[in-house]
Length: 231
Image (cartoon, rainbow, N blue to C red):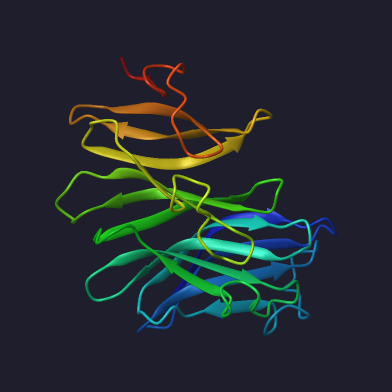
């Protein structure tokens, strides 16, 4: 048994949100804890300050957290079934209850095609309320990994205005690629940051895309800019 914190967010009232996972010896589930500014658990949140979410597998883990302007809370990470690991996303009301306006259940599982491994590492809200989730996918555990993004409408449905179906996969022709963070630029562009491994060394990688998911090819080389800090 045990638990692990992986991400933090500070509310406007200075209460602290911490996301991660909790393991009971059999199952690992999403965990979300809220602390008072003093560091004590906030008893008004969930059950004695903690909320757990089970996506129906024995291995769920939150990696990223985001706080909406209306106080609702988003967690993103992964859930693993027998044959697939998928993006897992949950949204909560301010008191920790599931937000049933999000995919009708408060939870959402996403993957791209039949990729065996899909893991979310970052989640953020655009100014228009749409939700962008990034990470990586691997067609099988033996394959190279690819940059992966989903964009959702506020209700959890896929945004067809992003890469035609709400899903975007990018490849730098390397063995391993993943997205760790992104920022929204003033001109409706999105700058992604992550890692690319070419079989020899890891490289800093940034990617510039338009709001519709298309590559800004004037940036770097065809939209990708890499830097090998170890060279």
